Image 1: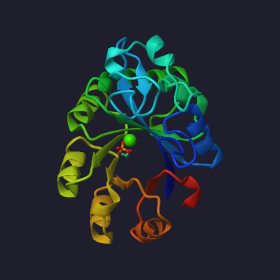
Image 2: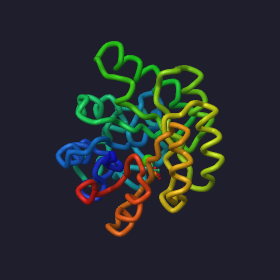
Image 3: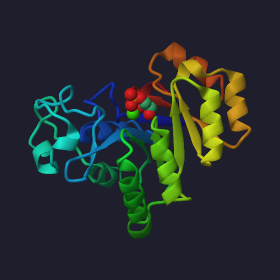
Length: 225
Ligand code: G3P
Ligand code: CA
């Protein structure tokens, strides 16, 4: 069962920062989860919201700001907003990277980036998962690459997610943990698809979900797994 740090180690450090990803690595995660948007100049930026308002000292939509403009803002007065390349180079193949696409426009860029890391930096396809609630974005990833591992995100409809996952030959389904029980987890796994629920933080929820034999847990507190 894989231990996957949500937005790095969000329970310990500011989400989606290099220090948060380093903390997750220090906690010996098997993987990290992060969120990506595109900047005005088409750089892959690691940030959860479509604006920088909640997490930084600035404001505005990520897609209206250039990388250099984004780099001028600070998270908790000290940390820069990282690019995906900065995070991958920090991780340096020490765990898998679950990249959540927050917009359709990121799909093509992600395929190009992952293929570059595989062909030029010796990363393996199975060191990446590309996940999204935007299933059109996932379909575009599959159209562009047969190799990339895809994770179908859902918080509402597990049956529909399973049908779609089979259709695009996804590697995993990432459901909100409240959707799961032992039977539906087995049903998904019987199709050769892994189950990575999110975001499970409370010890009693962790214990309960482990009984379902899921393939991994996405958590803000990797030390609790
Ligand atoms: O990838 C699982 C989880 O991160 C999805 O929800 O809102 O935390 O991006 P959110
Ligand atoms: Ca996410």
